[in-house]
Structures are given as structure tokens and as C-alpha cells.
Length: 51
Image 1 (cartoon, rainbow, N blue to C red):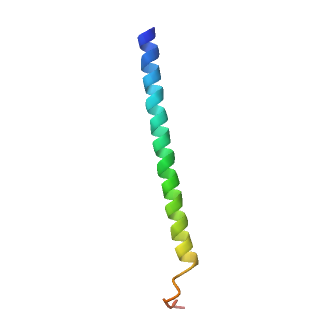
Image 2: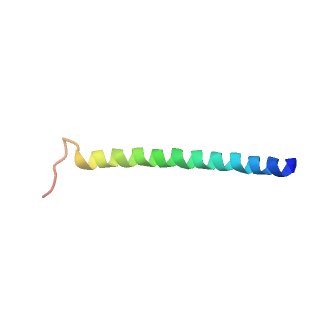
Image 3: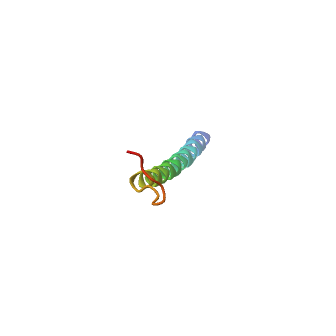
């Protein structure tokens, strides 16, 4: 029974690490998307926009 609990704990810990990794990657992607949106909304001043 203790061995079973140990395996469950290990799997739970692995799941927690996977979730944290996913959330970090999602946050990084969200930051990158925000940067891209800022660039689209505010083009560089030295470039002409074609109509």
C-alpha cells in the first residue's frame, strides 16, 4: 500500500511539473503576442505606410 501511495505521489509531482511548464510557456507566448500586437498597432515612425 505504501508503494502504491509512493507511485501516486510521484505521478502527482510529475503532473505538477508539467502543469507549471505549460503555464510558463503559455505566459511566454502571451507576452510575445502582446509585443507583436503593439508593433502592428504602432508601426515604426521612420517607415511609410502604403495605402
